[in-house]
Image 1 (spheres, rainbow, N blue to C red):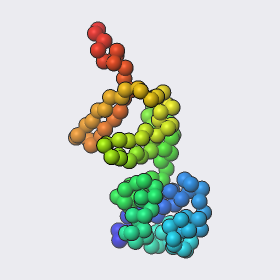
Image 2 (spheres, rainbow, N blue to C red):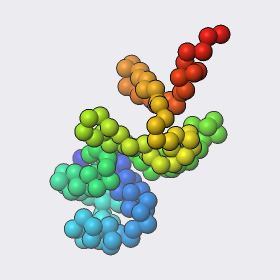
Image 3 (spheres, rainbow, N blue to C red):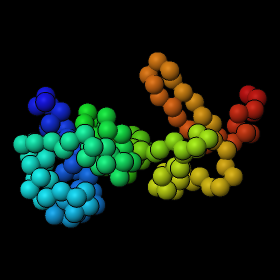
Image 4 (spheres, rainbow, N blue to C red):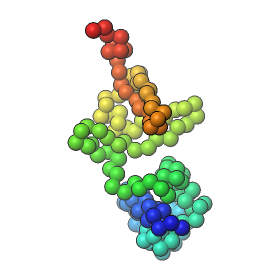
Length: 142
């Protein structure tokens, strides 16, 4: 296996475990493995098998691809940057295209039940965004 992938998996498992303040022993119990296995995963000495990666990814509501290829370490899901931008975490699209906006995002942007959000996207960059916009602002003539 590529050393980079092994390092990313190691970093992500350590990050996810620490996000919940779990010991290696507690993490191991949660996923039915030994503490030594978790220690080896976190050191990059070995990696979990595909089924264990799937189980870990499903538990933390991330994709296997994210677990093995996107470094999560160092991302504070609620940290505000100096320019007012946030990373609020990940959401899962459920039946009917529904998502649940993280509670902290609702607080920061003062979003409440019944508010209307505009959905925008950029196919070239593969991005989608939501914006709280009052209808008065959209149709206001200058």
